[in-house]
Length: 292
Image 1 (spheres, rainbow, N blue to C red):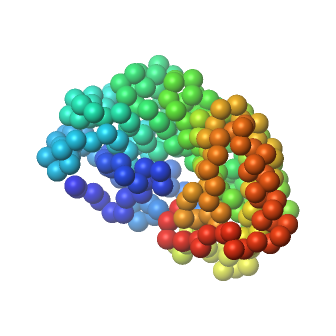
Image 2 (image 1 turned 90 degrees about the vertical axis):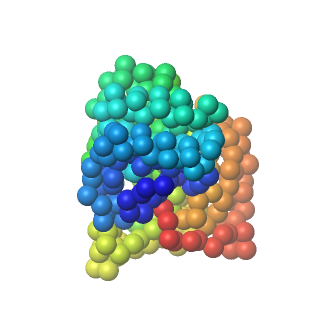
């Protein structure tokens, strides 16, 4: 398959066919993110993307799940995305899932009828990096939208009938009093959005990012594992989600759990409390910091 640069997809989409529709990320200014720093953002030619689908048919035969890359395929014009979706479903008769990353800014630029039409043509799921529900932290990490705009974007996806996966980042406030503020306000924003799925990541500091430079200058201190778990516990305590899967099964996290809220909330909190109170490092995973 034809790919430009490194390709990233959600951990849960590891077995999907990755179709590169855009190069890089339309925003690409977040202080913690390293994934697209070496790419200049652009939208690929539609004819190239459609040709890649034909090549995938020759190479894979049948495909059941597709993920549209890079960091913000929803930034493409809706009419082009519809042509891509139509060609995917025409080419792969057993296709049941198409998902994509999307920035809040790109979601807000789409009208609700456009998003609804994308859903009707087979866009099943959108992954939105909320990261934090705290206004100050969103500004500090240069997320590019306000808290209110993030809520509006998340609700808009759900209103269009598209499944919404929200990711949040533990440790994003560092070892400071803002960690509790980050945890509480992130729980609140998730409650306001009511995603279908919530994924936890843990901050990873990579060279070439602004947050790395802050660490070098002593302006940001990376939390220890038990502090990360305390933050996670506080966040889960504040969650009031009606029907939501929840996972921390990602290489960046020191504890891998999966559950469904609200039914599994008490068990999750019990597990976290036992580990934290007993300082039970034996139940923690080795953090692999090569991806986020």
